[in-house]
Image 1 (cartoon, one colour):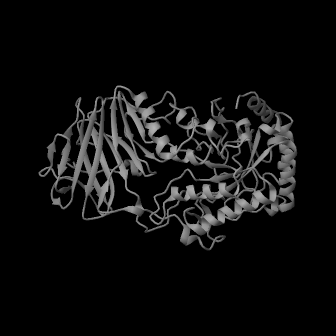
Image 2 (tube, rainbow, N blue to C red; image 1 turned 60 degrees about the vertical axis):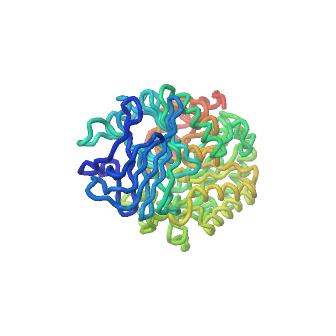
Image 3 (tube, rainbow, N blue to C red; image 1 turned 90 degrees about the vertical axis):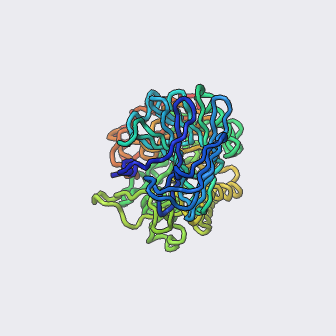
Length: 525
């Protein structure tokens, strides 16, 4: 059973307070050791909100020390909650519960066009692929969390057996590295009759608080990127050792591509160039089985001759414990610092179980970040590559030892200080991440055609995922998805088409590849 299906087996009996138009609200407080509601007996309603001088165990059977001050600011069709809580134990999360909302399905800026969330139970989590900015709408009601920092926000909508109507829960999770016995939740806004205006106001706040700059004015976008019409994924070596393309094969593939489109409009993305993909992480030198240093230098020379830009892939988190002995100090930990947090655990060799030596490291840890910076710098300085791609950075983990997003910022700042013209790209996108990386890969399996694409395309560009299937049977190359024929990519503004090339692509499927290249060549960047 997943987390989204977990629930209380009793009525928490929260005191709900009226808002307007039949909407009612309540508050719950969570520590690492328990969950509490406002004590119904001590809760006092006043003109500006509610004050509770005690908390109660969920279910209201017993009161405990602690309390909450909830101030409501009303301005026309808008209500803003300011929630402050205190408790004898460090506070993990605070939940605002809302009932009486319109009987309509929900949508967010990243919901696929023509689709909605609900009417059954669903959960969205920021930051992540399904909720890249904490704003959502239901009927004529829109909710917005105005948090200046990157912190976990969760929207969970369900109708428990004890409730007469659905309950929308907005959960704000306090950073694991900063938990204390008192906490103030960032403002939560509810707006009626104007969801479009609400989203505009929300994104204005995001721009200011996250430092987002519109695409046309970004200083970290090289001029050549604005002309790119096609990303070509040149798969190198699989985790098992299988070679899809040597560096000489990659050079020949680029010559083929440049025969159908101006090479200056092509960005060549190189996963598995360092040898056995993920197995050799986080050591990044040209793989011996692909041609080594001499072969990579030859590839770089051909790319320069054709005008093609090269973007090798680096693991933003990934490491093989056998290859990086300092991993315990940098590894991502769960929020209570009890165990290692894994982003995923792929089965790379098809023995039907995840590999045991893959861990994920935090770029906020100084030695690992320095290792990444030095690795990228060496490749830039020796081979003159134009870009660096960082795998998995779209995944956010609440590491109690060091703030992950701070590590991302530091990584970007240090690389840009050394290489101001270097393009930095990453896997996945959400609002604050788009402020750091002007180019991303759209998440694997996540819709591209979304309700409000401007939450991405106003600031950055995106392209197909590493696992996009190659022409033919749809090989995903070095990725763990096996064969996954790619659906036709919609021609969407801000989305750069991708062509994946594996070992049989050009020998057996050159015509299909050429068609994809021609389609990209006739699109406006």
